[in-house]
Image (cartoon, rainbow, N blue to C red; front, side):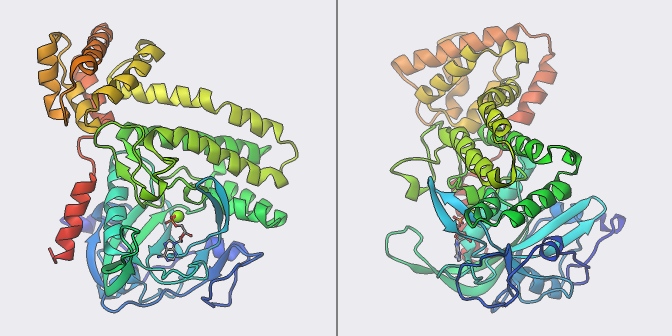
Length: 481
Ligand code: AMP
Ligand code: MG
């Protein structure tokens, strides 16, 4: 990096870390790794388990610069692998619960993630978390390890999401461990060894809906109250004051809706929207079987274990987020006097969603708010389902669409690169009709073409980390490329 001398850069191993969460709350300090329920505490102290041969594979220079972190020397790579702990780090695994696939699953917790402490700069503080650094009391019989395949996916996708403008946890580094991990990749009873890896991911906080739910479930009301107020005072400073819990809940709903809208904008399907994977900061977190859409299909789910019900399909994410927010509000009931205003907020979900969604769609379609009516949006969704273009390519082609391009032939010609299959007969008719309708609306606009093009290009991704690209990266890495 040519200009690194311009920045103040700290080494991972030499930094003074803070540990506000573990300082503040009761934890299980025994260090015992046996899987168990840990009543009355929010975390267990736990040492990462060292790996054989750590090797740095990827380093996010963009994030490192933002956090003023120097490129890792050998002892820093040891930290990134969990083989070494800086003196001021206090490694811990968080205890949380969650609703999984619609049912209360009880205690879950960080089974393959270990928090290290907070990295603080003038611009804020960031929790560091290793994913794949060995078992914790919450590993429930699993190994606490992560495979290279899933680690590469999280590393690349979370950085891609950030650069596409979507709130997300981020990944600083990817380290291969030199150890093999046994995994049943296709869940078909044929486990095989795969190379292991550890990523260091970071966010201001990894608190989840499930962190609050477990306290409600265990009846630990004092701790629930302390955690809630601490979360507000630490991460939502601007909300401090009267009725802060209510206003915080409203803010969590606001951020959750805006995250769902952003997922729709870029065609992201999370795949496991269990409440333990829902960030109270409104970040995309816990990248598992996620996928970006290829052809437009609201029923698409990348999660093979979700296939019968398609609970976490692309088109269901808004509904599920609402369901999850109800679980979250329910977990706060023991510490609030009057549930009614919470219900009122939840009842406003559809209204706020509509507002945020129409703003997003204006950006995606290059229209002004007054030009976008429900009819255009609903007919767009119907058209996309029938024509099934590639979601990403379609909108980039829409940016370049001349508004006087009105013959069926030339419209189809323009969008041909965005189709896996050219729509035929009635589907084609629906497609053409929508295009004519849209062009008419767009042509009546005051904004200059240059400005519209710029806005649309900003809203519509050009590059997305498609599954096959991630797969190619993984195959290359596994073959030492
Ligand atoms: P996820 O579906 O990845 O959000 O994980 C659900 C729960 O299972 C979390 O509590 C994880 O920590 C835990 N878990 C997932 N994979 C592992 C693993 N390899 N070892 C231990 N715990 C795991
Ligand atoms: Mg999870």
